[in-house]
Length: 415
Image (cartoon, rainbow, N blue to C red; front, side, top):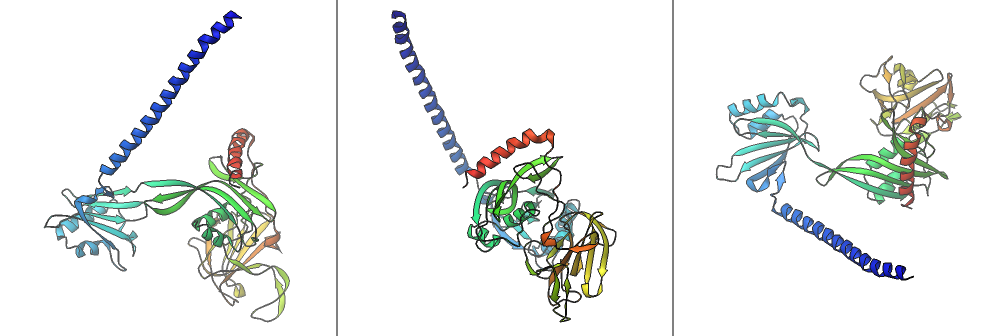
């Protein structure tokens, strides 16, 4: 009993000392982190403001846009550079820049010295939101492509459908690019032409920014779309070196065919054996689905296949037929024009643009008449359910389960 009391008397001070040391270490770590943040803030304050990597305090800046029917050479002449310098700049640009890619509205920025001579030292031409051409006019003249740094921000968005997906995203102040991303992921499982009030979604995804401008969406990290009483999960997973999306059981969301050949339009006429033809004014079968959409709307191949017909076909107007396999064929009628490279015999991939909505043939306005055939007989595209592609392989099941569990946990926290 005495030994136990002695040990207790020894242990209590030791534990107190240990706790004190841990508290001091925790305090010191917090102080160090605080001091580090303060130093970084001071450095940031002292750093000169930069634009395209150039010190803004050292230059007078002018911005402009390329004019219609203008060229980069014209811009150099308008800037009143001497002919020798213009020739040197153009020669230096040729190996790195295709002058034909200059577009009206492209932005350029001029950097002039602050002295009384106001000499032009740099020209920056923006080709894309991230890529720019930096031209140094000092001897020797140099031309180089540069990239702005991008910033990726993860977002979590939930929404309930009241009228349309577009309106819901607008209410949530979310980029409409997300609607396109969701339509791509769920193209085989959610009918975006038949969303119902109270359908809802939860999604975790990345946004990519340059400066404060959103330029694109990054990876969708997890999603759930509640549609017609059923939850459709989207779990990202790399299989066979390809990022695909799977449901919670490991079945691929990518099926043999897209749900529809257009992004976001409306159905103006359905598959039926009796319809009053809008021009002929007679009742006859309409074995397709009409999607009303503006002139020039891209039309997508709903699956891989070979074009077996592409031309003008009487009342069908400009039409494309694609054989996808031994069972299924699709047809796309009343097109305005075909996409580049589309002709009889060409191979197409699922989601590839094959043409553009028009009103050719017997048509009262711009729309796509889409038809689906099985063994040569027309079937209703809206009632057709395409089979899924390969599910998660056994060799990747354990890794998938880990990814899935994380995704489902994060989505459940968004309720």
